[in-house]
Image (cartoon, rainbow, N blue to C red; front, top):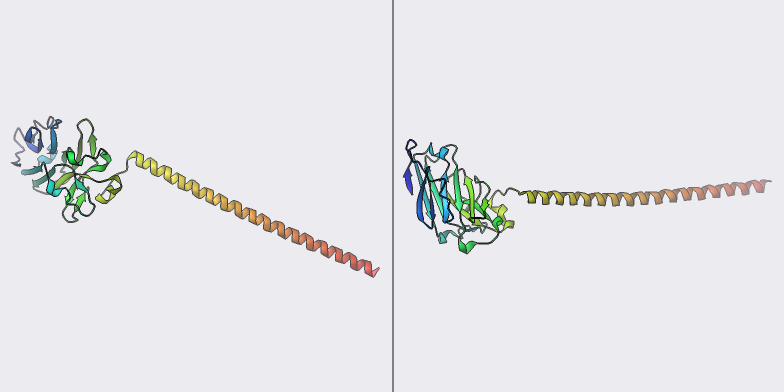
Length: 236
């Protein structure tokens, strides 16, 4: 889809979608109803972003088989249709585009934590999340949504949870924060126990040394006293 944008028109083109009903152009009159259950991918720019554009180009590939394993750095896999977006001018300010993806049936993992919106970084040869928001999952329609502040090639990527940090920013969820807090407390408690044990051991050793010194002093003093008594007895 390539559309000229006329901000003064009654219907302003904002994006495109593909699904069971075929390809659809999204404008300001249909944007509220475009996300029906049959939509597999959609890209819709914010209405405020359209005011600074003269044209908008969107290409959606429903079966991007050739791009599924294009990332050889993180091994992230493309799990949705591929959305390619371009705008003119390319540096228009305050740009925002909403992206919606339904996972390909062949890539369904059953774990929503393993899916994330990303763009393909042609300089790093990998999928990258920079400039994109957290991915929100709609369980009713099995759809993932996010928004980004730039235009390029977008997709829903699949990567096991332990590998997500290599794709870019991963914001911590409340459960992650709670886990880190409890782990930190456990470490602190363990350190306190070690310090307490060492302190107790040192105090015990110090007490033993003091007792030994006192015993030796008492024994030496007793010997000296006995020696002096014997000397006195001899003189008499």
